[in-house]
Image (spheres, rainbow, N blue to C red):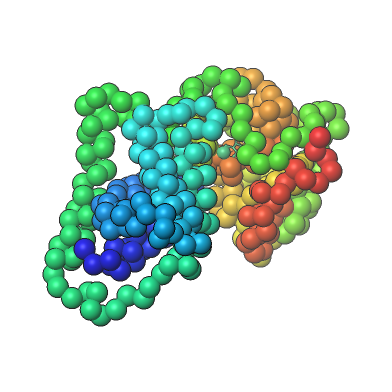
Length: 351
Ligand SMILES: Nc1nc2c(c(=O)[nH]1)N[C@H]1C(S)=C(S)[C@@H](COP(=O)(O)O)O[C@H]1N2
Ligand SMILES: [Mo]
């Protein structure tokens, strides 16, 4: 395999694996399953390329006299690729480790570290691909072989998992493992960055519905409890690698919006937490979502977002905003939400 074909092949595969991996964090519906399959195929295709690469550079790495300043990044890149693919495989097959940090968390952390270090490695080492590197047919056949291996890997892995009855055979299409069904409040708590608000006293809490509406509203918890209640069975699937199916009860967002009278320019609905955490959904999807006060037949406990949390079926857990205090109808998307989910909890109102 020509050296530069291997190197640029790895570059392309790692880049594509990073992009598809980030993409999977947004997929919560089975229609998006192909992205997980593509991502794992890319991960497997990295292995033969890594083998070709290491076979070539190994003798040089074994001779410290030939090391230069950038070799540290080459070594770190090697280890991080191995850990990233390794944790990905272990997680897919064994779903281990299960607690925090889960195999899924570890995979993501190694991948992010890899993305940073790999960049330096490329900047210090990259050599342009030349026409002569692409001569001959052998490398094409080998690359196709790697592609075939990748293409078969998903089915093979599913088959092996089922055959050996590995924990991996019991994962959801997102890779998440089950953490209870219909348990009421007894399912895991995840605050994924800095959010740790003090409990919100029910008598003081208010829900504000405003933005592109004709009649902005402010509702107390007592008033909310008077409104028509609806139930939804939906899966909360955390990108940290666990999911739980629950029966949620609360107020349909569409019902609230009808009361408030949505203006024609409305496009999105933003759900704001008391911590500053926020997420928005397209108007029609938001209408179908629930603002839940109950799970099973129990009132939500503080840790799960009491008095009210968003239940957005088909969305990943991080989008299910907890401790909702505002529903704001927007006429444009809200790119700032991508920053808010990382920095929320820094502002006052959190303990
Ligand atoms: N305000 C706020 N809402 C949040 C979070 C958060 O940190 N702050 N974490 C999200 C994440 S990552 C997940 S998986 C779910 C977890 O909900 P749970 O703690 O009730 O299981 O809440 C989401 N809603
Ligand atoms: Mo999450």
